Image 1 (tube, rainbow, N blue to C red):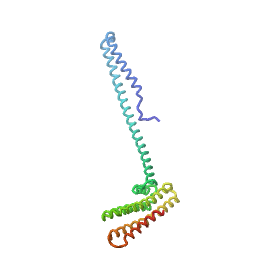
Image 2 (image 1 turned 90 degrees about the vertical axis):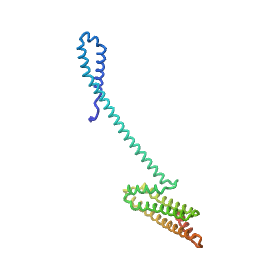
Image 3 (image 1 turned 45 degrees about the vertical axis):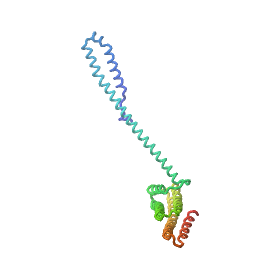
Length: 258
């Protein structure tokens, strides 16, 4: 099918332009001979005829060339932009895969914030039918963040630098929760969201992850209350430190016996 937007061939105009320039040159070189043989009036008439016919043709060729060049540049820019968009999309896809790989890496400390971003993506994307249980898992990570902030606030307000090792306990709990979430995400990556059996299996794993997370969060909350009780009774002869150590041991046993 012929392209209606295709520019006409410049060859005819180019030939006409060459002829015009050639005739103009010939007239200049033979001016004296023509005037002697045919007269000045004949020469002027011939010269004007060549000018009247040739000048528009030459101008037309120039306009054609400029339009064609402009169209080619526009087309090239469009192609470059499209290529750049495709390249950017490929790079973003590769970067997203790398981010996903790093998030689930077993060789590095897991980032709860980035895990929550992945959960949000699944929650609103392919696994939207399981959005509610996924949201519950994500909220547990939010609660864990709040508990860590409360611990820092509690220790700073009471100048309890000697208890800074309790931060490590909560960090270990957070990492344990993250690893449980990673297990579910790995299964979601290989499961088929359109297969009922796969969906059921993912749902069961989400429920198990949530149940275990709730138990740990309950222990962490009790640990924070025990810590507050210990700080309130500093200097008193009581067993609050013993209770604090019991809660700490309970938490560590829960995450180390996995």
